[in-house]
Length: 103
Image (cartoon, rainbow, N blue to C red):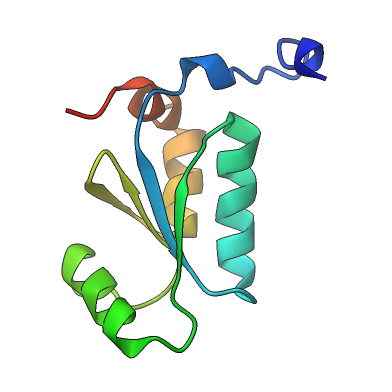
């Protein structure tokens, strides 16, 4: 089905970034954020932190105190939550972030 990617304006071959996302299984915002990442062709690392207060504290440390999920990091830089991710896409900055190799 890769032949459909250009028709759908999907370019997974352009994604070079390391993406991490902290989630809860039943969180609708987490599902929505993961859907956008999937659509962009991102292979991300998911940390499922349901009920794990220690993991949530680690996430909050990395996310400038934010304890809500999802929290998304691109190349180690905190990008925010679901709405922030969609805002980056809307203003045309998400693709360029995803195209940058970590390092």
